[in-house]
Length: 453
Image (cartoon, rainbow, N blue to C red):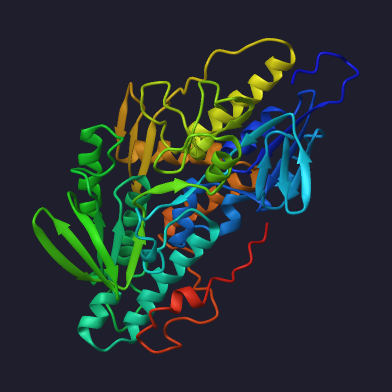
């Protein structure tokens, strides 16, 4: 695979996926003597860590999205193709994009993951997850539609159900969603309605383990729970969701079974690999774990195929401490950059040591002036953790205009406690079909917001 002669055609690198892993690999190859083709079914890179702020009306989708062509416009060795890969032929070394075959010398697969319902996929209509722009817009529509429906509802029990928000999963996404919704109900919207008191809303965060934020140090988990309770969130740990149906969430706490009437249920409990994992398994014989992630070699390649690398959430890399690396943005970034460096060294006839993830810490926003940060050598909480969280997220946004817009939005929100992106989008809202939205309403009327990027 190594081009040893100067007059050989340039080494062809194909990257599937424009998320953190794929984009960072492409950027790291910008000055390499290779040709890069980046393929994605979206024309933009999405900064997923801030999706929850789109879902709760703080930011707009375009604030955290960057057009891939714009990001890579100065990388003259890189071209971007809009499309969805449906198969891979490792023997012919081709990626199949519809009826088009794209040849490669080295392939990088970085198609990420989606939310998992642990075999209960029928819950998806009732409890949307948060992985895409469409997911965030759908969550936003449900959250703000719930307040509007409660304003019109005259039956106290039905109104209580509209004002009950259940978040399933106590990881960073669940914690951030719960805190943001609590701030909405108890602060931002407090003066906006006449028939309801939004501070009567209930925000419940459910976690199956014995504490929220399991990857964090126990003392930070305790601090996060205390901060959420300070905001008005009810945190219930050691709680399993056994059913979601007809606006009722069934819980199991030990031997006790409870039911909660809630019109808005949001899912933040688990993820599974994208379907590309199965495509790789069928075409290369790669082994996948229970979540569909491809088990990779120490250099992030597939066993038997040293020129096919898998990075990001799609990869199960367990060579460092026996456990898969977490599905977070820093892992994908470092893996993408590693594979880019590996390609360049191979072309020079050199080798690289096995990939080694450098864990620089974990962060979770809880609310205004409230966050927890675990950097290993130091642990922060409260205002300074919140400030650190803001700086880090601004720093890692891809384009300058995104950094500037998000910073201005955050400053304005801090001063006024207002959220300017509180839009309900779609063909119709629940209020247009009566106080009771039909069970198939959310499925039948997908969001139609145009992402102007």
